[in-house]
Image (cartoon, rainbow, N blue to C red; front, side):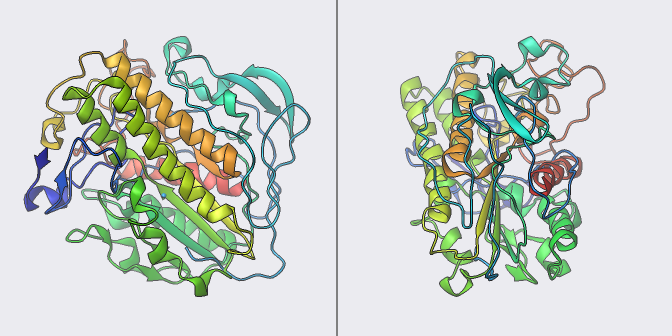
Length: 442
């Protein structure tokens, strides 16, 4: 158990999205205690990481995309006639099409913790072909694609966007209200400035896309005392994200959803955006390093992923809850070790409680891969969307210069993490904003 004092709360908020298991540096906010043995992860604060440039325009019909997966948190607005229509898969795919408020599909989720090549249905042009193939686009940019992290997303039959920055299960149009849930990645953390946070950058984009009332400057800032946005609601934007949040902070006993989605706002057509899970996996990584058996570690990861699943279902299962539509968009979980599971790769890792290595790093990678695969299963099962934060950040961490790292992209790569190890730098936030924008626009 690691206890942090107030001196770390401002500059080193709890980790938000440590790469699956690799993100192992969660720093609790002032007064919080990190308990490595929690079976039900508690709030997971992560820094927001954004990546990739976006294409397309709001209101356009989504087109299927060809490509492999790339690496790795309201109230609703009122519009009578708005309906969400997802991409229409051709025969051979199990992808979900959503009409009106998103509804859950019958897909079943299975846990995969093996590092196998991701193969499966690919998409070409505007429709999904259903022909077997590899998700090659997710492996582009790595010096040795054969050695890169391999996630078996194909088992869930996702529709990948033509940009290869995320999935394409929802036609996100006519948004009236935007709600940010999640951890410190979404709130934003120093040393990045408020205007650099991905939610701030994305808010500017969404104002332009949907004609929304912009938030004020205070909404774009983080309150270092409470670890939340300085102003919770401004214009058509709301933030209930918090430093140190974990997946059990979405629904009761946590309160993010209740705080941001009062019943009188259900009529608004709402876009929900979140980064969550980094603090969960950070705590799990610490447990494993301290001797928790692998089967127990995997069970904790499955439980945390299931809490995201429950949250997605909360939004999409009842078409009467959001009569004019709701869209749920989340990130998978990145890590700072570039696929090496070297928890000491970041100079400040010890400050976050990662002061010892895993006895078998391959097991940590296995847990991380399984965790992120379950995030994909949530997207396909509920007809919601996931961005590839893990895949895009891999190769831009603290082992970016190591030619033997699975995510090595060649010499001279920028580090997209800040000095806290687990939060995105200003560049990282821009990348995250781009990833979300690409999925929203297609």
